[in-house]
Image (cartoon, rainbow, N blue to C red; front, side):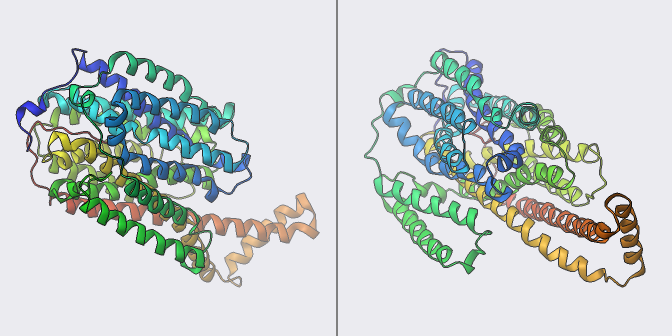
Length: 523
């Protein structure tokens, strides 16, 4: 446990709320980019001659670059100074955003997204560490709630703004929008952020080349396998089997090295703390659920219901409104209620709303899921801050930088796995349901023949008798495909609810957090 002197704010006399706004901008920009990109995926795919599955690499390539930089952010902060490193990361992220928007091919945008992910990887842990140190312990829950309040505005603006830009101009402007936000963030960080004495006087240890190399190998291979697995039939492809073998070897070696080395890049011994280890497990599961939701809900409206990007953004955007409504409540209850009760409410609410999504059909209106989407955001606001409060509550202040990198790393890993599982489920469960539905609809049934006859008559008046039956059969096959894909989406929604209910049980293995210890949270 850290003593009270180690918990004093380090804000160099600057108003801590100005510091909160400054660091919030950097994370806001990153979250905005993720939300915008998810809505624009079908348009990116069409513009760059890629499939929708391939376009999801735009999300996952960013996550893997994030995952590599996240654990190393603490070392770079000590080596180059936290303020200087944070400004550099924002500049890299902003410049890479321009190249993402200007990308002429899928390969080009993937390279740009990797660079963007490398720049964005350190934004969260650095921003969160700065925020935590700038406020006294008794105000950190309120500060984290304000930080989260600002960050969750991005999911409100992201889908709607991204959809409007995509429909009105081009998906490329969904990336260009980061440029003015990045410029403002650089200005405010330069003006209001100062490195505390322990950062200015710190001497970074020798860089852990082996640990960093192993981290790149296993995270890179993990993302490649997740991206290409469905396309190449997973373990049916020899190269995937070899990639998994190398991945496992690199991961085991990385864990052994990081656990036994005196000065590893990532100090995994922090995971021996019960609350932090359990918090990381919950973050993996939360990453699975959240990134699945972010990916699948806009696709549902666009792929199945034919919504434009702007319309889909308007429909899914209210999730952020729910989070905004929940954040003041969390700011008030954060130091008054056992976080385990808040987490239980949050995960249970998210799980129940996922089950509600599992009752969708092809006839829903834009308003049908409005309240469930708002309530999903409200429920998630009861997860973001309390889960980090519990995870960090028993750590010393000097462990926070390393712990924050690990905490955000496991969330990204969970997110990458979640996106891959979602894509695989949509493809494979759609095929399964198509076979099942086809088996229940024999062509000899009277209603089938009547429907085919009606469609044939309809097309006969427009296309002529020679083409009418073929067009009618194609229409019925498309309807079959729509119904099968609908059931695949329902399977994904129900899968997310199971994850949330599992998290409810895990929450109660936490030790009770000490009041007033608000951590470097998550978005």
